[in-house]
Image (cartoon, rainbow, N blue to C red; front, side, top):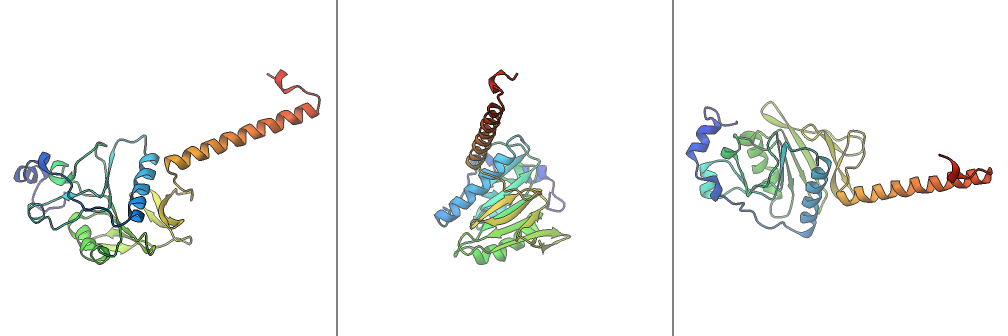
Length: 231
């Protein structure tokens, strides 16, 4: 937990009933922002479909203090990842109900109305209060893309690779721009697909195998061998 001298249990006892807390987030800035957020969620959930030890928050409120709860002066991250927790639906992320856990990774989608706050006030909050190990931001409009990793007590920029990607230690994936969208890439450089893209790839592989089988059968017939007689 990140609040010195207070345990998660003490914080929970001091806070209101979390069952009454719902997410209090505005709509996404544009269809571009909505599509980008949905893409980030869909790809990671598909890649980690066999895992049950994480939670992804998408445009979801994080409740972390009595003052923040009273003032409602904080808008939650566009995308955040919590590791080492149970994978189940939540109405909001309530830190005192979650063993004091804060996000391991946050991605903000910059917009005209939020960009200055995302680059300054939120960056400071995620660095100093949340102690979130990695923070990225991306603009679906301008394609501005930055990434930071917590080193000691300060965020340090994550260097770009030769192809313009940034490595995430929390995800063990690269983040980079592909077709004007922020995407995940494996350590080997493969694009992490959406479920639809994966289904298309699987059909293409099946078609290629079928075509090769037909070619082999035709070749055997040219040699006077009946492929149907080969066991």
